[in-house]
Amino acid sequence: MQVEAGEVFGFIGPNGAGKSTTIKLLMGLIFPTAGSARILGKPITDVEMHRDIGYLPEQPYFYDYLTAAEVLDYFARFHDLTAADRKDRVQRMLKKVGLETARKIQLRKYSKGMLQRVGLAQAILHDPKVVILDEPMSGLDPVGRRELRDIILELKREGKTVMFSTHILSDAEMLCDRVGVIVGGKLRGVGAPGALVDMKTQGMEILFELTGTSTAPLLSKATRTGDRYRLQVAEEELYAAIEQLRGAGARILSVSQVKGTLEEFFMNMVEADRAQAAAVEVSGK
Amino acid sequence: MRRAGIVALNTFREAVRDRVLYSLVFFALLMMAAAILVGQISIGIEDTVIVTLGLSAISMIGLLIAVFIGVALVSKEMDKYTLYALLAKPVQRWEFLLGKFGGLVLTLAVNTAAMALGLLVVMLYVKHSLQGSDAVVLVAVYFILLKLALVVALALLFSCFTTPLLAILFTVGLYIVGLYVQELRDMPLEVMSPAMSSFTKWLSYLLPNFENFNVMAMAAHGRAVPGALILQNTLYAVVYCTIVLTAAAAVFSRRNLK
Image (tube, rainbow over all chains, first blue to last red):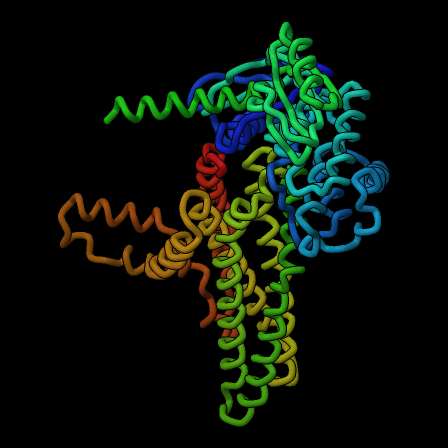
């Protein structure tokens, strides 16, 4: 798997798939039993390379006896910044992640979402070329998630390479140039979200309203929600179906194409993995 | 080394904010009570009792801090995941360990210095004056600090590969054994089998010799500590700490974090 410079790369997979493990390997927190990895062309064992990397751990915790400003200043010291530069960067980062007013409160009083914001601030404080975020949306409220999405897009505009893990597929579809899908510790697909799924039309969906009763045969195939029905038909059967429904007194509200989603691709991978695991278990017995 | 210094200063700040220096209040209360009592129950040996009591308290309080906080230096960072963000910075694992060690030794130095000052004040109160020979008390305090640095290094080493509880047990156990190293060396080796004799001899040199740092009796009686012993103990502590910390770094640099 290769993440290109300047792209936003999503690393997606269900819980326990190996996303955090992979990221910890990249950050040198755990060691591989086999294989190798490089970041910015340097082996991951080279700690000096961390000057150009920002990392947000999953569910970050920091020294709870420090304030947000103190913890950021502490981390900034490892990047050989001058005192004036550190002060300036800490202030800018706190503002960026929305913690300006809470800067003097000890972290022991912070909520999970606020700690996540501190984590993001320390990851991008030193203006790294590569930003690796492990489940960055975790613990954030909708406003926080929106702000984080904006920050990721801003980092992309600045030419940074961003890799983040998530199991929230809509975020991956919205933000990522490419995604890698990991299931059961194995990489199952890498590519643009649109390229991973079957983008050909899988059929047509008709949304219609029907107030009275009708015996039209197609109705038995439709899904009902109140007075509204959804009916999925093949593309070549669309006009005949509309005629039949109108004949039955239905009011057509919309017609849309049915396409595959990243979620479907993802679920198919998970289902296949589970089926394989079950098969192994049965044969083992 | 600069990065180790950053970690050390933060470790010191953590200790201060975790109210480690509150132990000074306990020491102050103990010494005040001792000063009042000793004047009433001792006849002519007030200064001996005060010095012995003061040095014992400095040693005991320091040992408690060295063992319990020493073991928590690494394990707490791993349990609370604070280590993750730190090791993602350009910091080597050995620099982190050295910084943690330095930070706690700095805390102990400040704590011990403050208690030594308190002891001198109480001695002045009891004896009404201080003589040049009382400087031996400061040498005894210095030896206690060297001993504590060694205990911190051992606690750090054990916490790198075992649970906090076991690390405490190992550290305390080794400390107690280290108090009897001289007895081990004085054992009649000629009555043992050659293998056992050799093993005992090597073990006595391998184990940390904490008894060497104990000059409490000399301090209590105002007897000067030879300069050679000061040099020997300083070198011993520096070399032993270096070996233990190198072993700790070797273990920790291969450790997978959870």
